[in-house]
Amino acid sequence: MERKRMGYSVTTSSKAVLPPGSLITGKWKKGRYRVERLLGQGANGIVYLVRREWGRERYALKIGYDAVDLQSEINVLQSLLTKRQQGGRGLRSPEFAHPFLVEVDDFPAQGRDIPFYVMRYVQGSTLQQFIAKNGPEWFGLIGYRLLGKLAALHEMGFAFGDLKAENILVSDYGRVELVDYGGVSAIGRSVKQFTESYDRGFWNAGTRTADPGYDLFSYTALWLHVLDQARLRRMMAEQLPITRQASDLMQLIRTNAHLKPFERWFGKAASGQFATSREACAAWKETMLALGGQSGDLQRNRAKTPYWLTGALIAAVLLLCSTIYWVLQS
Image: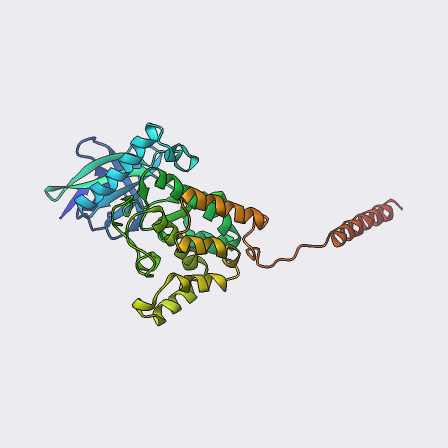
């Protein structure tokens, strides 16, 4: 079914992609959002970049395929927002300085109400895109900020669950944002959504119970996906499910120039040895500081210019300038 609005053809199926210019009008709150473009499409919904019809500020608007799944995601976001407003411990941190959830409503279409919610738009690149463009030397700082996000979420009683590169956006100066809360689960419950190669159960390293350790394990797999994806995929293709174990991931980390300096940290995360995610975050920072703020070989083995050579070059330039000056004066 299609409806004509403002000269645009709007397909109202929740699984169809709305073309730019489509207008989404909330049934209850009457919010009117104009679609600019598609941002992403996943298993449980589709996300658009939108503007309020008469405004300039941009938002991300998610339409759910399944009302129950989307409502569960909305409930988590509303809980986080409420706890932040009440001064919840984790959400007082700078990682959650700005409210993520803006508005919740339904979109009348095809004789039924399609649920959607509006969230703050985060402009940035996926984690893999950012590292590919800016270099792996950013991995230590981005990792530290991501751990801070996870620790704040854990302190509010939730595990992120489906932690993977596609669900992380990185903006200028390595600022990090988690952007898909569909897999967020209350600590102690079963993880609602996961991606196999990031999953603790997939690697026979623990249960699929939502807890901080589950996210820290996924965090370990995450960096192999970003910095050693070819070898990770090759190893997975050669393994039998029953033989997979966390030590396989550690073997890859041990032989990766970028990840090896953090081997001890990853070993504790993969085996669930951190008492809390804040402890893990602090240990990551300590490792960074011990490495002089760099992740081992993350500067691609660039040698520093010796001080004597730098001084000699400066002296040579000054001498040249002086010579040119006297020649011109003569």
